Length: 287
Picture 1 (cartoon, helix red, strand yellow):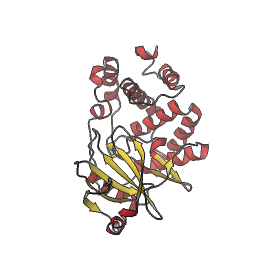
Picture 2 (cartoon, rainbow, N blue to C red; picture 1 turned 90 degrees about the vertical axis):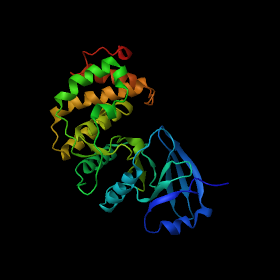
Picture 3 (cartoon, helix red, strand yellow; picture 1 turned 30 degrees about the horizontal axis):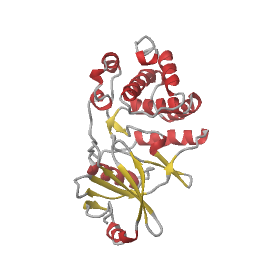
Picture 4 (cartoon, rainbow, N blue to C red; picture 1 turned 60 degrees about the vertical axis):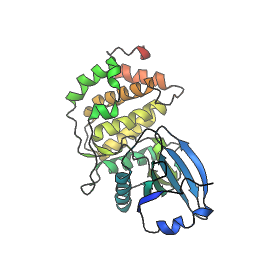
């Protein structure tokens, strides 16, 4: 029986990839994730491990761009997996082959919150003039289908024009604990599907909001303070972006796209009640 690495037409390969593929008969494969957008498989060889990501769901991102971006960022010393190859399998699905860099962070502390904030800031200030990243309409990209939710849609129409959105730097688009791996004290940022030219204030606010909802106010504020210590973003700018991030979570939650923590609904309601841009809005699901 064939394996997911068989019959891949490799469009680009790193140095040493051919030698690695010659060992594929000795590989063992272990599925590690069945996400909304892709299948992820851990591949073990004699002495190293790798990851094969197969976009066999509805999402069809630009894997060529991801491969080249990861290669650039890896060479710059950023905390990313080393890309080894990308191509298309027999079913027409795009695949990306990278190093394996550990498991998602599960234990949080003051130190790793600060470390992750510093890594995040490094992403936002990275010089990417040699990489052409896409730029999208903010509402269309981050709020798909929002027009069917009139309360969120009208809130966006009133808030977004006041932000002076600055889509000029690289943003990750979904920086959270599941997308940060840890191995031997080293962190690696994965899942660059949403990478684009965007506004770091929103990118940060989304990450901050997820920590606030799924961890605690304490860790969220440690992350926030550490990031702002390195950034030129003004603290008073962020409340409106935090409102936008919360609106996105509410939309995703209505569409079944967010995990449910034991206190997540209560924490979101608390965010709404304490944000000047949200507290007067009629969200029936948080009354």
